[in-house]
Image 1: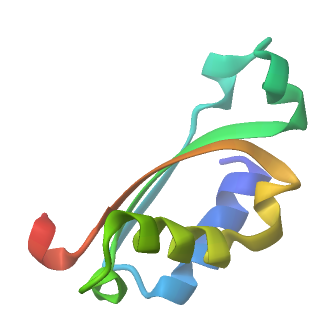
Image 2 (image 1 turned 180 degrees about the vertical axis):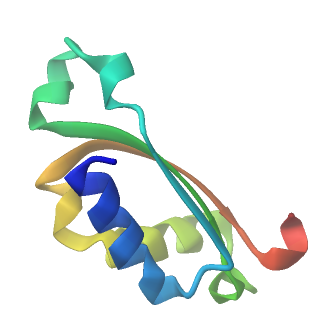
Image 3 (image 1 turned 90 degrees about the horizontal axis):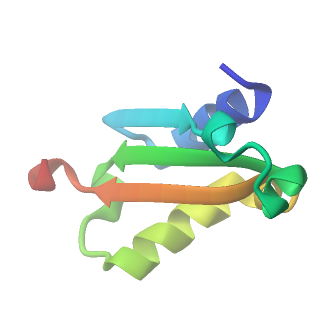
Length: 87
């Protein structure tokens, strides 16, 4: 696991996930123009913290938890944000 993926896992714990999966897809994007500024990651997170929140609000919560990694280490972040009832 990359250092950035480990940091993602650590920071997203603040949302108290019931399920959290971080996949580093950076190797699939090698040579991509923006890949030099950081990696490509896919996140699946299931948490009750998303109850009553729409998709945009959930994504903002993830971005807030990730913080400065979006500017230093991550070029692209794909996410699937679910409540426990949605799985």
